[in-house]
Image 1: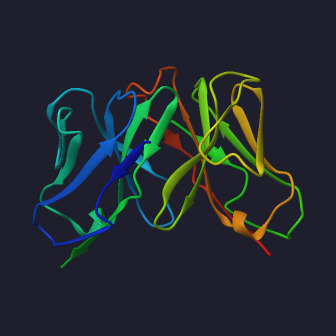
Image 2 (image 1 turned 30 degrees about the vertical axis):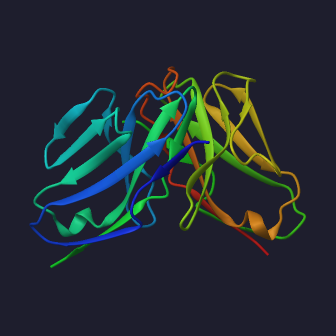
Length: 108
Length: 115
């Protein structure tokens, strides 16, 4: 079967660094994506890793280890506006499988 | 600017009614998707389409059908709505590709309540 596992909730303080992990078990792996969704909003694309290693986009970085079927999203210099749900997703064929999401709470 | 629009943000229907959810994208994307989102379950794929008049079942197609008569428009149909179809429905589109990093662009969602 295909599955993705990520923590349901993470809490951190403003200005801190937080890491959201994702482990996956899929057939036909093409890459690991991350999406952000604020309450009442649509998911929006954050990053994509096809190869092992770290991809950096501003305050957000994403890491992939294909041999470990593992990746993470790293958020630095946390801001209150980063409070949202974060989904990891893997693509295989035309289907993208999404994790259940991690709810990030950023406290002042 | 990339845009995916959905016909309604909120919809209330009665059990047994036929429900149409419409999605339109203006990016000339080949692929379109319908998901439902429920707390703790993430996004689950109902149906997707990779071309006009083409459709493929996702993970939870039971009780749903779809229609894609034009490239920009993808409709989700609930033939006979039931209370367990109360959910947030999200439409998405992406450019051609076999899941290889093809970013999905989502609409704002339709929160459907079936009474």
